[in-house]
Structure formats: C-alpha cells, structure tokens
Image (cartoon, rainbow, N blue to C red; front, side, top):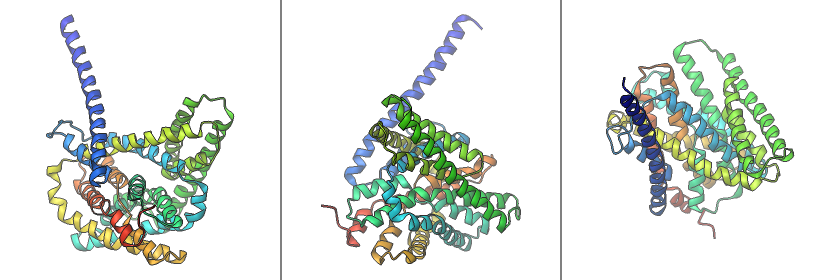
Length: 408
C-alpha cells in the first residue's frame, strides 16, 4: 500500500470520527430545541427525545445504523446511574421520613402486583406462555423517576406534601424490584424449575439488603471525602460522578442492586453538608438532562418504526391494562393501610408514567440470544410511548380534576 493510500485511509477514519461528533452534537442541540417546543405545546419532553432517535435511525433522516444491544445496555446502565444519582441528591431526609414506608411498599409489592396483573392479562389475551408474559409485566412495571419529576414540576399542581414525597421516592425506589423480577423470570424461562421459592426469597434479600448496605456505605464514604479532603470545588462533582458509577458497577458485579445502591448513596451525599454542595447539585442537574437525552436518543435509534405495526394491537391492549387496571389496583392495595384518601390514590395511580427503564429491561433478554424475539422489545417500546402520550399529556388536567389546582 502506497503512502498516499495510507494517508487517504487515515483521513477517512478521521472524517468518520468527526462526522460522529457532529451528529452527536447536532442531535443533542436538536433535542434541546425540540424540548423547548414541546414545553410550549405540553408534550412530554422524553417522548420528543425518543421520536428524534427513531427519525435519526438507519434508513431515516440521518441514517445512523445502530442495533447493538450490548452497547445499548452499557450506555443505558451508565445513563440510568447518573439519573439515579441526581434523583437521590434531590431527595431530602424529610421526604423519606414523610413517605418512605408507603413508597417502599408501592415500589416492591406494588411492582409485583402490577407485573402479575399485566402478565396474567397478556397471557390470557395473546396466548403467550405465563413466564414470558410475566417477564413483559416485570419489565413494564417501574415508573420513570425523570418523567415523573419533570411532569410534576411542569403541572405545577398543589399536591399535599406527603403525596408529592410518595411519588418522588417511589419512582426512585421501584427500579430494583423490576430488575430483580426480570432476572428471576429470565432464569426460570431459560432453566425451568432452577429457582424455587426459597431461592427466590434469598435472591431478593441479596439484591435489596446488599444493595442498601453497599449504597449506605458508599454514600457515607463519598460524603466524608467531600467533607474532609482538600478537594477543589470543580473536582467535587467529578468525585460524586465517578464514585456513583463505581458504586453502581460494584453492586451489579457482586449480585446486589446497583440501582438501589446508587440511589441511597446519593441520598446520603445530598443530605451531607459540605463546601461544594451547590456545585454538585447544579452539575448533576445538567448531567441528568444530558443522560436523559443520550438514553432516549439511543433507545429511539434501536427501533425500526416499520417493524412496530405487527405488535401494535397487543401492546396497546397491554398499555390500557397497565394504565387503567394494573397500576390503579396496585396503588389502591398498597396505599390503603397508609390512609391516603381516594383523590390522592387516584392521582398516584395516574402519574405512574413509564420511561426508559422498561425499554432498558426489555434489552436484557437479547444480550444472551443473538436471534432474539423482537416481540418483547417492540411491545414494551410501544407501551412506553402510549404511557407518555396518554398520561404525560394529562397530568395537569388530572390534577385539576382531582382538586389539586395549580400552585399560587
């Protein structure tokens, strides 16, 4: 190969890199602009990010080919860890005291009830094997912390303090239960009878207790580092970011819940007073938005819109069951002992928006099966869009209808 040919190859590689940088920056700017427009028309901003990702995919506007579920899982895990850190930093201890137990019950038992009702319905209507239907229910069960927080702020509803705390804490706590159920069902589908009731309980305790312990320990260590080490203010957010990612990765590697560990660790950091408190908080507000943009754009890129229509009828029925039956029943059962009134229970039922986590969980079965069935991923994707459209567009009207008018 001649020197001129080698130089041409080098220039081509550089041009590809520069094109990817341009595309990434351009998509980010487009997402921000579209988000500002969506705010004016009341559209859920996360839905806009998904739509841009779909339009940017292969054979569409930007022609970006992306179907690597392994890379999607890596990017999704890192983005969700950042979003959970930001959510934990914004969760004061007073909010946990006010609503921890009802939120914890809703984030565990409620997720199980939601998954069970949706899974049973899917199996009955579509004839899907019970385990596979329950897998779809487990993936669809968690609410989205980012979507709930954004829409509650935009709705400006005058919610009772306890109800607001419940919704914020529940959306931060319910991912671990869905992850646990998803992995449990994948094991049972791959090796029927491999895990009994006792094994499932032990696995649950390992996930939750281990994740909580690691989160508390990691959060305390990072908080003490912020207080005692002579760190310059610009480095403090970097310490929290890298520490949060390390806690997430370690928890996942040793078989505990990285989602729970990351969230609780961030709660401890957020409640610790240190010199760079405001710097850390402001940094993560921006980082969480960046993580959401990257995450939803990537999930949109994974989808080929032309492949979705065959799955529309079943997914729409599943979304209707989730929104109108499974979530309301789960919320009613879980909140009844805590004396929430009917209006509060109804609003908590309606604000159970789905977002990135269900799509992220639907990727996991595909990591082990290169010839994966597209049905789970496509159905969950459609269900999330339906939730964002139906519930996301009606949070403010629902608040007014239930007597939680706008804040003065």
